Image (cartoon, rainbow, N blue to C red; front, side, top):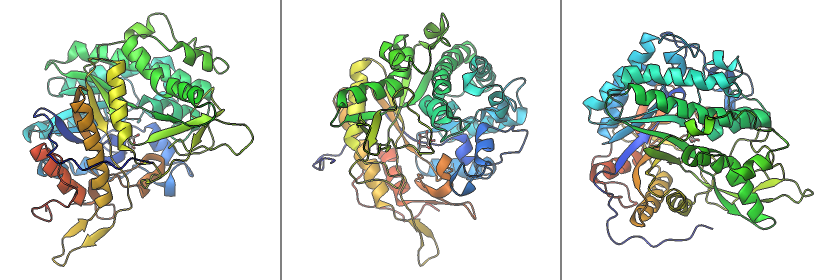
Length: 488
Ligand code: FCB
């Protein structure tokens, strides 16, 4: 059970240069799926395939951000955000994943970056948040080594266009999900269920990262920072075989990325654990050296913890790993690890709420990789929000659970900082409600509510609370913020 913590008696203030921002991803908010020359991505194909997403939802319209750029930029400014983490849709820039840039695609991101800079908001760009051009998937996607090189070319194209203005480049968002959910469990696009394919994808994603950083370094002119964002699995071993279960899942989920990225090698135990699945022949001479690039920032996404033990092989195997269960396994070589349901409280995703897990993760990364600067690139929660109409006709969403979630995780981040972790910022997931992948529009993570019928944006109470944090740098009390009841 989460420990009850005493309320801090003094204001919890972040250092003046600590960045407080919000995050989104292209396919989740943009819509305009077939406009201005954008080619299809694997998520278009996947979401348009019956049975793949909740309610058959797709990102065709999403939050219509593509058509509401100015309004959304003004919204960010009104919330006092100091930075905005967005992703660039590869198929908008290169509709088939290769070849010359689509000027209209690049123009959209140029306007986004300029609009941010005009408003004093730092642009933090992710090159890949899961929307692989379908044409590349047709050639094997991330199981095809050539995709890593195509990604490097794409990085160069984007770097040439925006490499004088973007402050932080993130190559990949959560390659764990791209590889294991996309090619192992089948919960994410392209929906394949093949453990060997998933591990091949892990390596090609790592390689893509290294090659892309090389290309970006060659073309950027404003001395940006380079990063990658990982979704760490914070593991709690329970009961039978706890230590072994933790070791195996840590290797697959965490060290398959951190070791090549930050130490220039794959973990030997990972190779051994997966020997029956693959011989790892896809790792070629020189690959790990190219993956092992100096990283200015390591992006950390954290939502919940994961409880594991070794399965006894007789009782029904529990599968509460926090990811949508569609039949396949995202854990190649470890079918005998069991994922246990955890005590509440839970969010609407069914994820347990455990801010201490974030503090532990940050301390652990600091210990493992001393001197590595960290940034929390995602943290947030889905709850079943209700829009209410005030007597004066304005809208409101009262979301005290989300404020509580954010506040307790920010306090955890603050504790880690006070303990010496080089933590440079925090991005709330998400700026606005959006297409939550396999869960479609059923799950609302935004601090701003989106009415998908009208596309009207309504800052939730959590947005007003977060604005106070962003403006003052101090974590506000749990109560609703003072000040005007609505921003619009
Ligand atoms: C992360 C993804 C992000 C969003 C949140 C809830 O895994 O990076 O796009 O779906 O989870």
